[in-house]
Image (cartoon, rainbow, N blue to C red; front, top):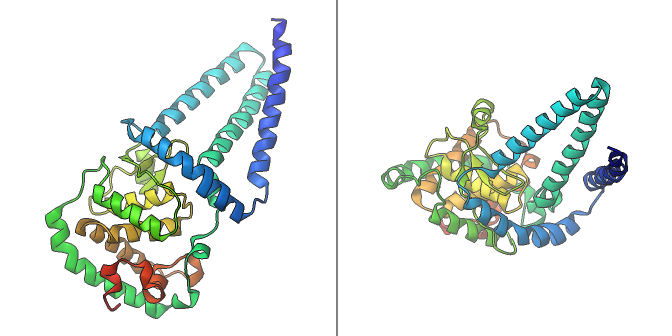
Length: 310
């Protein structure tokens, strides 16, 4: 019992260091070019293939295991604090532990994936003409989407869709080709689609999928229709490639679908039709709007699309 105070001082010092480091990592104004070069195309590009390879070979979502184990440990230790000492001291320990554990989880998220939020925008790394994003271009894109959906419908439904829990080789191959077009360095391992115990939340919140930022898994909603699945999976793979922005992952996911099988193309055009049917955002809402690519940058568009008048 006498050794406990001696042990608590180093622990408090380490906890304070962790909190300071986490605060600096969260608030430090790191330049985007440095994040792009040293993190996104350096550290992250090196660890992603290994981490996703391991998580792909685990039959369940490691994200679930992490949250369950951390939550269970937090409850058990918190109960011990409350019932093993005064309520005031126990509450203070729980609050301190919340801060320290929260900082550790946040720092781990930043290191494994989260710094991608601060990388250079895709629009700054690829040819982009903001003036090409206008109502006329969007209208032409919508017309092309409807036309392609009608043309692909019999082919897509005759082909069918890959099972929900496997990586579609055609989609994975298209993913590699599109990443090369975006200038990505290194190889990105496509994540095997997995369901999560939080699927009930996905269904009620209208979430189609998410990336696990700790084990770099692709988590998808269990109620996705087969026709929706290719685009959602390709979108999540975009996040695995280090594209944290939702708009950028949408564009990459769309191009991936258009380079894959008719079934995947159908899924991509269905997404675009839904996107167009929603209220059109202003040009600045999407960092790299697909309408601009169709009008001004045909070299970035699959040949099946670039060769057609839109």
